[in-house]
Length: 106
Image (cartoon, rainbow, N blue to C red):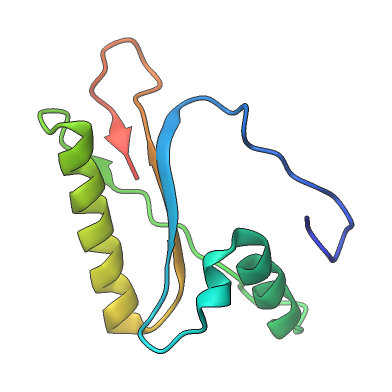
């Protein structure tokens, strides 16, 4: 539920991804593992009209890896970014959107 608009988003039927999770910096309150809590808090904290509430990193994953290996690699990359820069991150691993099956990405 987006508290600023009152709109509820439902991605449960969206196809093409097989893993999502929130990664928090050390010492962060565990309540932010909840997507709605995290993103509504971020929206409330950024009050300037030209503020940036999030950035997107798109990272290709080797198709030669298993799903579990891609998940571990994605978690490692995300954790390193969170540790280095101190931000919260939501990672979502997506399946290839083309028939060739080569474009796994997070």
